[in-house]
Length: 162
Image (cartoon, rainbow, N blue to C red; front, side, top):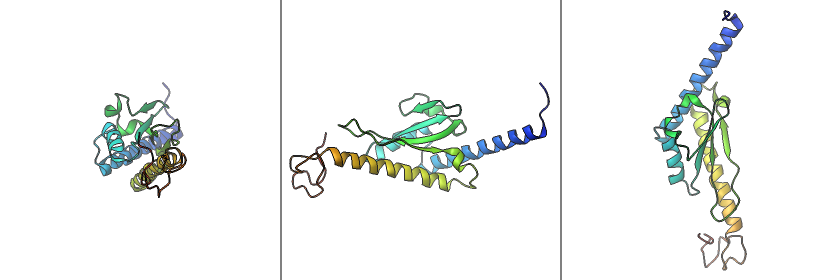
């Protein structure tokens, strides 16, 4: 193996620093939410969002890991390139588009606050989009159409519950 040039060495050092910083930011996100690992984050997303959101992860190299993957508890923050939030809407074939956060976007931040804000905003966008799909497709007989009437005297703006 030939020795590294100074440029290659600096590039390797920068990549290591970025990887460490991204891992620290992601660990801060888990800590902020009170989750010890990605499996717990996924469980709490599902349990504590109205839409039953779920977690998606992309590992370095592009391999996806979804909420049902048994490897979720063993994934370390340094293994993750991006995280995403998604959901389904019961009784429809529609779903909001997955909200992805590429950790490289946050790598040069001094702390994890922008990543935490971005993740929380992504969760809220998924919640809002799921509610919009629900309202567009689950009107009851009292609503007079498939669209939920927020003033409906029958369902009180909740639509048909499946």
